[in-house]
Length: 362
Image (cartoon, rainbow, N blue to C red; front, side):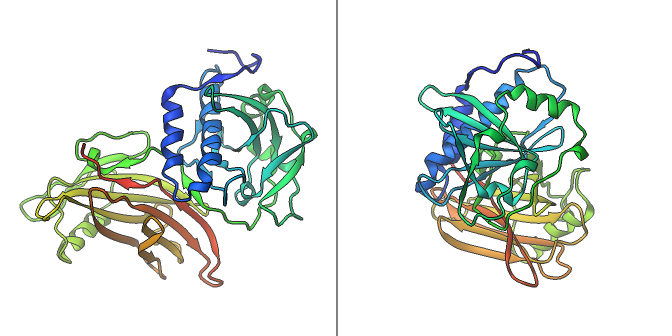
């Protein structure tokens, strides 16, 4: 392990990290944003690798990390919702030769961070280096309505080891957060793409999703693992009573997702549709709140194929779950998007998409 006070060096990315960035960037619907998004994803992978090589007492959590997708080519992408010892960290990509000003994506201020790391990405050699880090409290972007704002380089600190010192020694209450921006940009949860066919063979990244099986009992009820409450069992029972048959071969997974500072649990159940004339698969989605007994009013669950919205469900007053089910052929892929809508003004507050879900047995 490299000690805390070691000098920063170039980080050589592993092939696995590069492939992860490629896969997610290529899955984005807008082809004009893929290159900038790829660079931002490499920046996150580089910092993750760099931090893991250090003997620091820092707890690093990127399970809720988001890619802030730019509107088009040439607009920088960014990363937020990464946490180190509970401090919020954002990431942006800068050029090697930047001297006076850093082009800062204003979308990062939708969910302000304590620190922002400016990363130089050397994509041809699969390396990253660190230009500087910025304290969120030092930024004042109130006057800008553009997608980016120019930040003086002098606001940053070049020695990234100082960032590790802050993360390891400061109290969370000692760092103020900057003012939030109302700008909403497309955001993607940074996770491995889900191949639902692999779930049926229990092949999955267990750090992202937790698998569980639905077992049919003679009474037709679903058994459950201790991680689930009795209400979820009744939900599957009601779904079957409504006419949807869930075969015993079905496989399920769940994970937590944060949207508008509220934590949800997302369940997905998938199976092959054997009686179909051509190969098809089914996807059942259930969304519940972890924090409350009902969903926040205005929570939306959308299922898309490309730009086409196939299903859109919205939580009303006292809604306990949102449920969606869709059937597709083996060459179709679906994108899940969670959105938070202000129930009074109908303004979009937060939006988060998952990488496409596919069914590829071979």
